[in-house]
Figure (cartoon, rainbow, N blue to C red):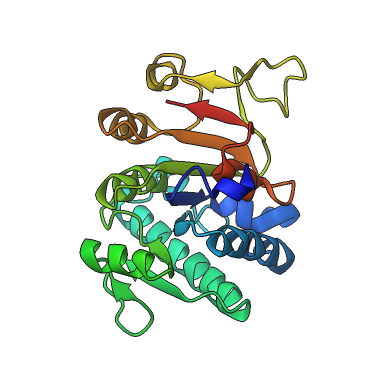
Length: 240
């Protein structure tokens, strides 16, 4: 299968902050970051155009702070800054592996990243550069899952790779709590909305449905999983 090249030519890899924290649960685990960067390099080497959306939950969770009484907009902007920290860390690790990388941010920070410009992002991808989208959508009240769906639609990505830190697919309940949780190999977009599976928020799921963007939910715990997903091997849960 690998001889025929990747199944998906242009991808959006959604990395949760939790995934970047590794076993630490908080902050950035450098060993985990190195593993992720190495896997990204593997798929760029086989001709995949790679963009990444970073979450920020390993540093700050805006939604959680909002529930505790903090102004939700302020809490969400703080979360956007957390995604920038993760993006810069990933860029540094990729460039150590000689992977040409650009960070584009929805919140302007000229000293550290380019502003998000759709056509420029596509041009970077066509030139073989990895593009990391930071700063969420630039608006409060939207998750980084929604950012991944929005950017995937804008750059006409073939698929969203939803990489998880603790689980390896979609289940009907939390497999870390319920040992008898039922595994789904394939789902429809409406299942995400109707069954309240917690894979991504309803805004992100609706965007993917409206633009017919498939989603592969898989775990990062095993090395090589990103490449398997790109090659079209059976892994995790396919949502289409």
